[in-house]
Image (cartoon, rainbow, N blue to C red):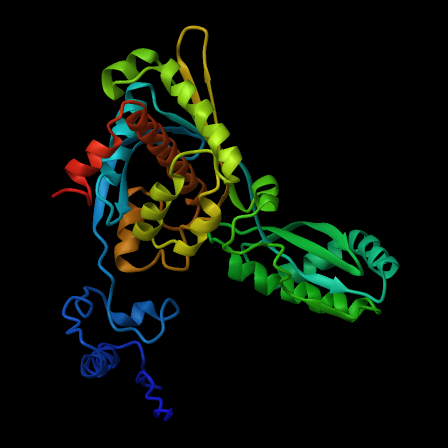
Length: 393
Protein backbone atom coordinates (compact mmCIF):
# COMPACT_ATOMS: atom_id res chain seq x y z
CA UNK A 1 0.00 0.00 0.00
CA UNK A 2 1.47 3.35 -1.03
CA UNK A 3 1.91 5.93 1.72
CA UNK A 4 0.43 9.28 0.75
CA UNK A 5 2.19 12.54 1.46
CA UNK A 6 0.92 14.10 4.66
CA UNK A 7 -0.65 17.51 4.10
CA UNK A 8 -0.89 19.35 7.44
CA UNK A 9 -3.50 21.91 8.36
CA UNK A 10 -2.05 25.33 7.42
CA UNK A 11 -0.91 27.74 10.10
CA UNK A 12 0.64 31.21 10.18
CA UNK A 13 3.67 31.50 12.40
CA UNK A 14 3.32 35.23 13.03
CA UNK A 15 -0.44 35.51 13.65
CA UNK A 16 -2.26 32.20 13.71
CA UNK A 17 -5.27 33.56 15.63
CA UNK A 18 -6.60 35.94 12.98
CA UNK A 19 -9.54 35.91 10.61
CA UNK A 20 -7.12 35.50 7.73
CA UNK A 21 -5.55 32.41 9.26
CA UNK A 22 -8.99 30.97 10.01
CA UNK A 23 -10.19 31.65 6.44
CA UNK A 24 -7.08 29.96 5.03
CA UNK A 25 -7.87 26.83 7.04
CA UNK A 26 -11.54 26.92 6.01
CA UNK A 27 -10.52 27.10 2.35
CA UNK A 28 -8.10 24.23 2.90
CA UNK A 29 -10.86 22.09 4.47
CA UNK A 30 -13.43 22.95 1.81
CA UNK A 31 -11.04 21.63 -0.81
CA UNK A 32 -10.31 18.41 1.07
CA UNK A 33 -13.62 17.54 2.76
CA UNK A 34 -17.24 17.24 1.57
CA UNK A 35 -18.53 20.05 3.83
CA UNK A 36 -18.96 23.70 2.80
CA UNK A 37 -18.47 24.71 6.48
CA UNK A 38 -20.97 27.52 6.05
CA UNK A 39 -21.97 27.76 9.69
CA UNK A 40 -18.71 26.74 11.35
CA UNK A 41 -17.06 29.79 9.83
CA UNK A 42 -19.60 32.29 11.20
CA UNK A 43 -18.80 33.82 14.56
CA UNK A 44 -19.12 37.15 16.33
CA UNK A 45 -15.78 37.62 18.14
CA UNK A 46 -12.20 38.38 17.18
CA UNK A 47 -10.29 35.06 16.91
CA UNK A 48 -7.38 36.72 18.72
CA UNK A 49 -9.26 36.37 22.02
CA UNK A 50 -9.20 32.58 21.62
CA UNK A 51 -5.40 32.38 21.79
CA UNK A 52 -4.62 30.06 24.66
CA UNK A 53 -7.99 28.35 24.30
CA UNK A 54 -7.72 26.70 20.88
CA UNK A 55 -5.19 25.82 18.19
CA UNK A 56 -5.83 25.75 14.44
CA UNK A 57 -8.97 27.88 14.91
CA UNK A 58 -11.52 27.62 12.08
CA UNK A 59 -14.78 28.74 13.72
CA UNK A 60 -17.30 27.77 16.34
CA UNK A 61 -19.66 24.97 17.33
CA UNK A 62 -23.04 26.63 17.83
CA UNK A 63 -24.89 24.75 20.56
CA UNK A 64 -28.42 25.98 21.32
CA UNK A 65 -28.69 27.80 24.66
CA UNK A 66 -31.90 27.76 26.66
CA UNK A 67 -32.70 29.37 29.99
CA UNK A 68 -34.32 27.76 33.02
CA UNK A 69 -35.59 29.69 36.00
CA UNK A 70 -36.04 31.47 38.16
CA UNK A 71 -33.94 29.24 40.42
CA UNK A 72 -34.28 30.31 44.05
CA UNK A 73 -31.10 29.71 46.04
CA UNK A 74 -30.55 30.15 49.77
CA UNK A 75 -26.78 29.83 49.78
CA UNK A 76 -23.90 31.37 51.65
CA UNK A 77 -22.60 32.85 48.39
CA UNK A 78 -25.54 32.54 45.96
CA UNK A 79 -28.66 34.20 47.30
CA UNK A 80 -31.87 35.04 45.47
CA UNK A 81 -33.22 34.23 42.01
CA UNK A 82 -31.11 33.11 39.04
CA UNK A 83 -31.91 32.46 35.40
CA UNK A 84 -29.65 29.58 34.41
CA UNK A 85 -28.19 29.29 30.87
CA UNK A 86 -28.02 25.73 29.58
CA UNK A 87 -26.39 24.73 26.28
CA UNK A 88 -27.70 21.45 24.94
CA UNK A 89 -29.14 19.67 21.93
CA UNK A 90 -31.29 17.37 24.08
CA UNK A 91 -34.96 18.25 23.88
CA UNK A 92 -36.90 18.31 27.20
CA UNK A 93 -33.73 18.94 29.24
CA UNK A 94 -34.26 22.67 29.85
CA UNK A 95 -37.99 22.13 30.37
CA UNK A 96 -37.32 19.42 32.95
CA UNK A 97 -34.91 21.56 34.95
CA UNK A 98 -37.30 24.49 34.71
CA UNK A 99 -40.10 22.35 36.16
CA UNK A 100 -37.88 21.35 39.05
CA UNK A 101 -36.99 24.99 39.65
CA UNK A 102 -40.69 25.85 39.84
CA UNK A 103 -41.26 23.10 42.43
CA UNK A 104 -38.33 24.22 44.57
CA UNK A 105 -39.21 27.90 44.24
CA UNK A 106 -42.67 27.24 45.67
CA UNK A 107 -41.07 25.13 48.41
CA UNK A 108 -38.91 28.05 49.51
CA UNK A 109 -35.78 27.48 47.47
CA UNK A 110 -32.66 25.34 47.57
CA UNK A 111 -30.19 25.65 50.44
CA UNK A 112 -26.57 25.27 49.31
CA UNK A 113 -23.34 24.84 51.25
CA UNK A 114 -19.75 24.59 50.02
CA UNK A 115 -18.15 22.28 52.58
CA UNK A 116 -14.68 21.77 51.08
CA UNK A 117 -12.42 23.17 48.36
CA UNK A 118 -9.24 21.57 47.03
CA UNK A 119 -7.47 20.73 43.80
CA UNK A 120 -4.70 18.17 43.48
CA UNK A 121 -1.58 17.19 41.68
CA UNK A 122 -0.34 13.72 42.66
CA UNK A 123 3.36 12.99 42.21
CA UNK A 124 4.82 9.57 42.99
CA UNK A 125 8.33 9.03 44.36
CA UNK A 126 10.26 5.80 43.75
CA UNK A 127 12.91 4.46 46.17
CA UNK A 128 15.18 1.40 46.44
CA UNK A 129 12.91 -0.15 49.07
CA UNK A 130 9.80 0.39 51.16
CA UNK A 131 11.86 1.54 54.15
CA UNK A 132 13.43 4.38 52.19
CA UNK A 133 9.94 5.36 51.00
CA UNK A 134 8.69 5.39 54.60
CA UNK A 135 11.60 7.57 55.74
CA UNK A 136 10.90 9.99 52.93
CA UNK A 137 7.27 10.27 54.06
CA UNK A 138 8.42 11.27 57.54
CA UNK A 139 10.74 13.88 56.02
CA UNK A 140 7.90 15.30 53.90
CA UNK A 141 5.84 15.91 57.03
CA UNK A 142 8.77 17.59 58.77
CA UNK A 143 9.59 19.88 55.86
CA UNK A 144 6.06 20.83 54.81
CA UNK A 145 6.60 24.57 55.38
CA UNK A 146 9.61 24.60 53.05
CA UNK A 147 7.75 22.59 50.40
CA UNK A 148 4.75 24.89 50.69
CA UNK A 149 6.97 27.94 50.18
CA UNK A 150 8.56 26.41 47.07
CA UNK A 151 5.18 25.55 45.57
CA UNK A 152 3.67 28.97 46.19
CA UNK A 153 6.48 30.83 44.40
CA UNK A 154 4.66 30.01 41.15
CA UNK A 155 1.19 31.35 41.98
CA UNK A 156 -0.57 34.37 43.43
CA UNK A 157 -3.90 32.70 44.13
CA UNK A 158 -2.97 29.08 44.86
CA UNK A 159 -2.22 27.83 48.37
CA UNK A 160 -0.79 24.41 49.27
CA UNK A 161 -2.94 23.15 52.15
CA UNK A 162 -1.51 19.71 52.85
CA UNK A 163 0.12 16.63 51.31
CA UNK A 164 -1.62 13.27 51.58
CA UNK A 165 0.55 10.12 51.53
CA UNK A 166 -0.25 6.61 50.25
CA UNK A 167 2.44 3.94 50.22
CA UNK A 168 2.66 0.91 47.95
CA UNK A 169 5.68 -1.32 47.31
CA UNK A 170 8.77 0.92 47.18
CA UNK A 171 6.78 3.95 46.09
CA UNK A 172 5.20 6.80 47.95
CA UNK A 173 2.16 8.26 46.21
CA UNK A 174 1.27 11.78 47.30
CA UNK A 175 -1.59 14.18 46.74
CA UNK A 176 -0.65 17.86 46.96
CA UNK A 177 -3.90 19.63 47.91
CA UNK A 178 -4.37 23.30 46.98
CA UNK A 179 -6.99 25.99 47.10
CA UNK A 180 -7.00 27.77 43.75
CA UNK A 181 -9.12 30.91 44.06
CA UNK A 182 -11.50 31.47 41.16
CA UNK A 183 -9.61 29.23 38.73
CA UNK A 184 -10.36 25.53 38.28
CA UNK A 185 -6.68 25.04 39.03
CA UNK A 186 -5.38 21.99 37.17
CA UNK A 187 -2.64 23.97 35.44
CA UNK A 188 -1.93 26.04 38.55
CA UNK A 189 -1.41 22.96 40.69
CA UNK A 190 0.74 21.30 38.05
CA UNK A 191 3.14 24.24 37.90
CA UNK A 192 3.24 24.68 41.68
CA UNK A 193 3.83 20.98 42.34
CA UNK A 194 6.60 20.85 39.75
CA UNK A 195 8.39 23.65 41.62
CA UNK A 196 7.87 21.82 44.92
CA UNK A 197 9.19 18.54 43.51
CA UNK A 198 12.30 20.22 42.13
CA UNK A 199 12.98 21.61 45.61
CA UNK A 200 12.38 18.17 47.14
CA UNK A 201 14.76 16.41 44.73
CA UNK A 202 17.42 19.06 45.37
CA UNK A 203 17.14 18.64 49.13
CA UNK A 204 16.47 14.93 49.65
CA UNK A 205 19.03 12.39 48.43
CA UNK A 206 18.07 8.83 47.57
CA UNK A 207 15.05 9.32 45.32
CA UNK A 208 15.36 6.92 42.40
CA UNK A 209 12.86 8.84 40.34
CA UNK A 210 9.69 10.88 40.61
CA UNK A 211 6.73 11.36 38.30
CA UNK A 212 4.87 14.65 38.52
CA UNK A 213 1.51 12.92 38.05
CA UNK A 214 0.90 9.34 39.12
CA UNK A 215 -2.77 9.18 38.09
CA UNK A 216 -3.75 9.47 41.75
CA UNK A 217 -5.32 12.89 41.14
CA UNK A 218 -7.51 11.03 38.60
CA UNK A 219 -7.80 14.04 36.30
CA UNK A 220 -11.01 13.87 34.25
CA UNK A 221 -11.85 10.42 35.58
CA UNK A 222 -14.31 9.78 38.38
CA UNK A 223 -12.77 7.98 41.35
CA UNK A 224 -13.61 6.85 44.83
CA UNK A 225 -10.69 8.75 46.34
CA UNK A 226 -11.95 12.07 44.99
CA UNK A 227 -15.53 11.32 45.97
CA UNK A 228 -14.34 10.75 49.55
CA UNK A 229 -11.51 13.31 49.73
CA UNK A 230 -12.91 16.06 47.42
CA UNK A 231 -11.60 17.49 44.17
CA UNK A 232 -12.72 20.96 43.19
CA UNK A 233 -15.67 22.12 45.29
CA UNK A 234 -17.64 19.82 47.55
CA UNK A 235 -21.16 21.23 47.56
CA UNK A 236 -24.38 20.13 49.24
CA UNK A 237 -27.75 21.24 47.86
CA UNK A 238 -30.81 20.42 49.99
CA UNK A 239 -34.48 21.23 50.25
CA UNK A 240 -37.65 20.15 52.01
CA UNK A 241 -40.76 19.92 49.83
CA UNK A 242 -44.34 19.54 51.11
CA UNK A 243 -46.33 16.61 49.77
CA UNK A 244 -49.01 18.99 48.49
CA UNK A 245 -46.54 20.52 46.03
CA UNK A 246 -45.61 17.12 44.62
CA UNK A 247 -49.30 16.39 44.12
CA UNK A 248 -50.17 19.74 42.50
CA UNK A 249 -47.05 20.36 40.37
CA UNK A 250 -45.52 16.93 39.76
CA UNK A 251 -48.60 14.68 39.87
CA UNK A 252 -46.77 12.50 42.36
CA UNK A 253 -46.48 12.21 46.13
CA UNK A 254 -43.72 11.92 48.68
CA UNK A 255 -44.39 8.28 49.61
CA UNK A 256 -44.11 7.16 46.00
CA UNK A 257 -41.03 9.33 45.45
CA UNK A 258 -39.32 7.75 48.45
CA UNK A 259 -40.20 4.21 47.35
CA UNK A 260 -38.74 4.97 43.93
CA UNK A 261 -35.61 6.35 45.62
CA UNK A 262 -35.14 3.07 47.52
CA UNK A 263 -35.44 1.08 44.29
CA UNK A 264 -33.02 3.45 42.56
CA UNK A 265 -30.48 3.15 45.37
CA UNK A 266 -30.48 -0.63 45.12
CA UNK A 267 -30.28 -0.52 41.33
CA UNK A 268 -27.30 1.80 41.50
CA UNK A 269 -25.61 -0.39 44.09
CA UNK A 270 -26.10 -3.49 41.96
CA UNK A 271 -24.76 -1.82 38.81
CA UNK A 272 -21.74 -0.25 40.53
CA UNK A 273 -22.39 3.36 39.57
CA UNK A 274 -20.57 6.35 41.08
CA UNK A 275 -23.83 8.26 41.43
CA UNK A 276 -27.09 7.13 43.03
CA UNK A 277 -29.02 9.99 41.44
CA UNK A 278 -30.80 10.28 38.12
CA UNK A 279 -28.92 12.53 35.71
CA UNK A 280 -26.64 15.13 37.30
CA UNK A 281 -24.39 15.02 34.22
CA UNK A 282 -27.19 16.53 32.12
CA UNK A 283 -27.47 19.82 33.96
CA UNK A 284 -23.77 20.10 34.74
CA UNK A 285 -22.76 19.53 31.12
CA UNK A 286 -25.28 22.05 29.81
CA UNK A 287 -24.11 24.72 32.25
CA UNK A 288 -20.45 23.89 31.63
CA UNK A 289 -20.78 24.35 27.86
CA UNK A 290 -22.72 27.60 28.26
CA UNK A 291 -20.24 29.12 30.73
CA UNK A 292 -16.87 28.04 29.32
CA UNK A 293 -15.97 25.32 31.80
CA UNK A 294 -13.72 22.43 30.74
CA UNK A 295 -16.43 20.02 29.58
CA UNK A 296 -14.23 16.96 30.19
CA UNK A 297 -14.42 17.72 33.91
CA UNK A 298 -18.01 16.48 33.82
CA UNK A 299 -16.46 13.01 34.18
CA UNK A 300 -15.59 13.93 37.77
CA UNK A 301 -18.08 16.68 38.50
CA UNK A 302 -21.17 14.57 37.81
CA UNK A 303 -20.45 12.16 40.67
CA UNK A 304 -23.08 12.61 43.35
CA UNK A 305 -24.49 11.27 46.60
CA UNK A 306 -28.27 11.53 46.85
CA UNK A 307 -30.09 11.20 50.17
CA UNK A 308 -33.82 11.44 50.83
CA UNK A 309 -36.26 10.91 53.66
CA UNK A 310 -39.97 11.37 54.31
CA UNK A 311 -40.59 13.48 57.39
CA UNK A 312 -43.34 12.52 59.88
CA UNK A 313 -45.61 15.26 58.49
CA UNK A 314 -45.22 13.92 54.94
CA UNK A 315 -42.67 16.49 53.77
CA UNK A 316 -39.87 15.21 51.55
CA UNK A 317 -36.28 16.07 52.47
CA UNK A 318 -33.92 15.67 49.52
CA UNK A 319 -30.23 16.45 49.16
CA UNK A 320 -27.49 16.09 46.58
CA UNK A 321 -23.82 16.15 47.58
CA UNK A 322 -21.46 16.84 44.69
CA UNK A 323 -17.98 15.90 45.91
CA UNK A 324 -15.87 16.84 42.89
CA UNK A 325 -17.38 19.91 41.24
CA UNK A 326 -14.62 21.53 39.18
CA UNK A 327 -15.66 25.04 38.16
CA UNK A 328 -14.08 28.42 37.41
CA UNK A 329 -15.25 32.00 37.02
CA UNK A 330 -11.88 33.26 35.84
CA UNK A 331 -9.41 31.97 33.26
CA UNK A 332 -9.75 29.12 30.80
CA UNK A 333 -12.80 29.43 28.58
CA UNK A 334 -14.74 31.72 30.94
CA UNK A 335 -13.50 34.88 29.23
CA UNK A 336 -14.70 33.94 25.74
CA UNK A 337 -17.48 36.18 24.48
CA UNK A 338 -20.54 33.92 24.70
CA UNK A 339 -19.36 32.12 27.81
CA UNK A 340 -18.63 35.34 29.64
CA UNK A 341 -22.12 36.63 28.85
CA UNK A 342 -23.66 33.48 30.30
CA UNK A 343 -21.62 33.81 33.48
CA UNK A 344 -22.62 37.47 33.68
CA UNK A 345 -26.29 36.41 33.51
CA UNK A 346 -25.65 34.67 36.82
CA UNK A 347 -23.46 37.49 38.17
CA UNK A 348 -20.74 34.85 38.40
CA UNK A 349 -18.02 36.19 36.14
CA UNK A 350 -14.61 37.14 37.52
CA UNK A 351 -12.87 37.27 40.86
CA UNK A 352 -14.61 36.23 44.05
CA UNK A 353 -17.50 34.46 42.31
CA UNK A 354 -16.50 30.79 42.08
CA UNK A 355 -18.27 29.57 45.22
CA UNK A 356 -21.41 31.42 44.21
CA UNK A 357 -21.28 29.68 40.83
CA UNK A 358 -20.69 26.30 42.47
CA UNK A 359 -23.81 26.79 44.59
CA UNK A 360 -25.90 27.71 41.54
CA UNK A 361 -24.72 24.58 39.72
CA UNK A 362 -25.48 22.34 42.69
CA UNK A 363 -28.93 23.87 43.19
CA UNK A 364 -29.69 23.32 39.50
CA UNK A 365 -28.68 19.67 39.81
CA UNK A 366 -31.08 19.14 42.69
CA UNK A 367 -33.95 20.61 40.67
CA UNK A 368 -33.20 18.29 37.79
CA UNK A 369 -33.04 15.24 40.02
CA UNK A 370 -36.46 15.89 41.50
CA UNK A 371 -38.01 16.72 38.13
CA UNK A 372 -36.81 13.58 36.37
CA UNK A 373 -37.60 11.43 39.41
CA UNK A 374 -41.14 12.76 39.44
CA UNK A 375 -41.56 12.22 35.70
CA UNK A 376 -40.53 8.57 36.07
CA UNK A 377 -42.89 8.02 39.00
CA UNK A 378 -45.78 9.73 37.20
CA UNK A 379 -44.99 7.80 33.99
CA UNK A 380 -44.56 11.06 32.06
CA UNK A 381 -40.92 10.58 31.08
CA UNK A 382 -41.41 8.90 27.68
CA UNK A 383 -44.41 11.10 26.80
CA UNK A 384 -42.34 14.24 27.49
CA UNK A 385 -39.61 13.10 25.11
CA UNK A 386 -42.20 12.24 22.47
CA UNK A 387 -43.76 15.68 22.78
CA UNK A 388 -40.68 17.91 23.17
CA UNK A 389 -37.60 15.84 22.53
CA UNK A 390 -35.75 13.99 19.83
CA UNK A 391 -38.40 11.25 19.70
CA UNK A 392 -41.00 13.64 18.26
CA UNK A 393 -42.43 12.71 14.84
